[in-house]
Amino acid sequence: MARIVEFASYGAPEVLEFKDVPDPQPAAGEVRIRVKAIGLNRAESMWRHGEYIETANLPARLGYEAAGTVDALGEGVAGFEIGEPANVIPNFSMSQYRPMASRSSCRSARSSSSRPRSPSWRVHRSG
Image 1 (cartoon, rainbow, N blue to C red):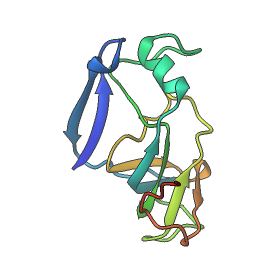
Image 2 (cartoon, one colour):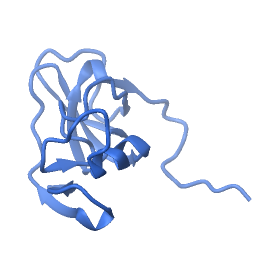
Image 3 (cartoon, rainbow, N blue to C red):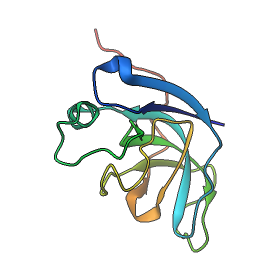
C-alpha cells in the first residue's frame, strides 16, 4: 500500500488527509519509485490554496519532487535497474501525474534520473 497526502477542497493544512491506496503499477515507459523523501515547495502551497498558475483537479495530492529507489519498471524502460536510487525531475504539470507524497509512485522514465548512492537517507543537521 502507498500512503498519500490528499486534499479534496482548497484551504489551509487542515484540508490535507493521509490515505492508504494500492501501489500503482507502472505503464509502458514509466518507472515506479519506492519514495523515501518528498519535497514540498511554495508552488504546492499555492496549489493547495487554489492560487497557483494551474488549477488542481480535485481531489489532488501533494509531493511534486521525490527521491527513492526504483522498485518496478514499465515495458520499454531502459537505463534503470530495480534497487537503483532515483530522483524525480518535475518536468510535467502537477495535474498531469498524481504527485508523489506516497510510499510508491510511477513517473515517466524521462522525468526520472539516477541518484548517486553515496548520500545516506539519514537526516543531517548543521550546528
